[in-house]
Length: 233
Image 1 (cartoon, helix red, strand yellow):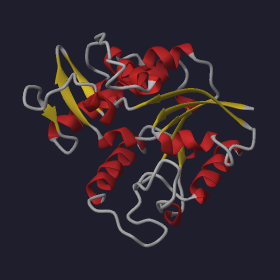
Image 2: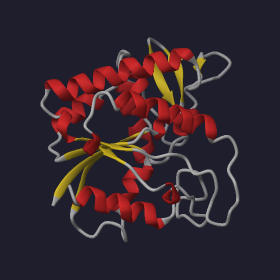
Image 3: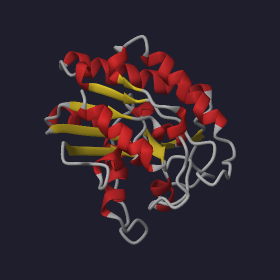
């Protein structure tokens, strides 16, 4: 059984659920809602109000982001492959105290951030892109220095432009263009075998997906294909 560490979003995480996971993959860690664009920032500790963010998983995601401890977990865990997708780039960054935080939906619910008093860094800004490149360099250098770069797998995915009923999503083009910029960067650092590519026909949203209709909640074919790609490595 292959042990997999997932850093990214539910697109990659859901591959380990039934009926897609046939028992040959073991999810050993999952880090979500945590932008690589803030890896160069200081760590802080924050306390999340349970009443405002009832989910323990969501509170932990915010706390991990604030502590900036991705590299710590990458060093701590034992895994055969590190599966990464870049769906966290849909989130902006926000200045908070001495650092930057990923401005996730969960963080916005926490009550810690007031858009009128905290600077928001848009994910389509030059500053975000510069921070992203710095963070990516830190990430790749860490993996290389710790002899883990060969374990890295990139889930080369794009937001769906429409769902399985043909209903379109608005404004996904800029995010997909941003993802292309990331994949172009990575093509200079990784072997082609480390990039999982898919038929565009898989990037269709499932209208009755259990997480809800969204351009990042795909039809079943995607998850089955992703599973087989990893198992076959």
